[in-house]
Image (cartoon, rainbow, N blue to C red; front, side, top):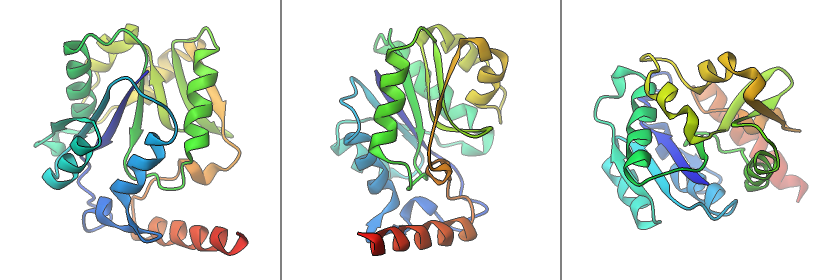
Length: 201
């Protein structure tokens, strides 16, 4: 199983680079790397981003770093850059796609998604809470051509929608694990939840 972390968003709604936000005393992009590192021993790991310091950090953790210097061309550009890199190193297995702004995601959930996918006969996998799909998701290499044909602002959900019968949906107990930081409001909500969770310990 290979891993791709997408980290090239422009953070327009957040107002600044959200990947530098503080999450319980840790920078968000470092927090996300640990979640995936503690979840599974991935064969190849790729980070697609636009901040050179973030890319350097991930490289120090064993990732192949790819710069997306045109994030305004849509989220599919990062997906395509990653797929081309995977094809270049001969990826024949599944690839998990994750994002770098999902701090409530747990390593346990990532591992659960991988294990359930491996024990199924499906070629696509998506995390799900009720009727809401989210990251991470997994695609076998048979879908690389379709991923490469995505339109500018299209993502993996389009392929999932077109191939529901090929998709395993892994239900998540806590829907907040699928929450991205897109706005300051969502950021403060996440911080409040972390604070409340810490009080329970």
